[in-house]
Length: 281
Image (cartoon, rainbow, N blue to C red; front, side, top):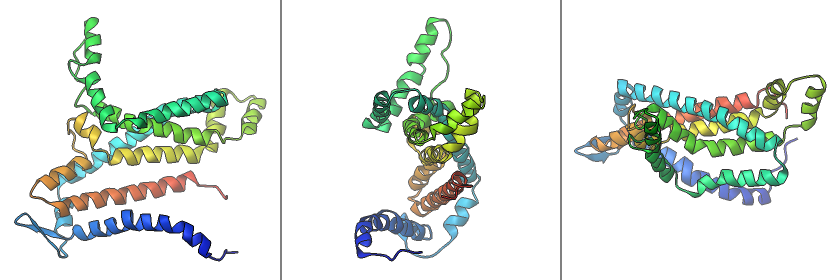
């Protein structure tokens, strides 16, 4: 039975509706319209022309950047989730409630500083004369090229998403039914098998959503690819800035941005569908 819509409910939901309209729907509509405008003599001209879509989708560099961004974001999300799970598991099942609160506080601390500052700090460690290469030099190794590599970019991605992924996984793991774990142990199920057979399926929603957030953050990130990866290989975020600098081609940059939004919406839909697959409540 469907409940009637009340004025009370509409009043409290109005701020959310206004927020979505002002900061999502209206900018998205403008972005779609902008993608059909043209640039002549470095000036935007309103109109309806598909030349921007045809031009961008016809460039191999666009699809190369798209594949690179997709692969790196997916790899970073998988790697971050795999590394974050033992941390979240230990906090959820091995620590006391008081220690768990401190652990959550420590996970929040990285957000006190700017992500850009954290990325710059990695340059101190990864440069040719950085801390890591200096320490390796003490034992006669190196210097190794650590900065301006894909590995450095992935490290920046993990810096961005790791604390958030741990928190999201933790909030899911703490609600796992402990009686199911005890039942698995009573049936002589080992600890590792219990994790994969009981804990992970029970916390599937939170684990998938955490990986999804990591993917979304990495897919649109500009800071790590440019400051740690040196802009090579080119990602979609870098391609947007290069496009706007090349003749003020904002409509073509809008095409890239809309492609990214569409990709994230598809990935989010598939991830949420997988997370809630088989659930009736």
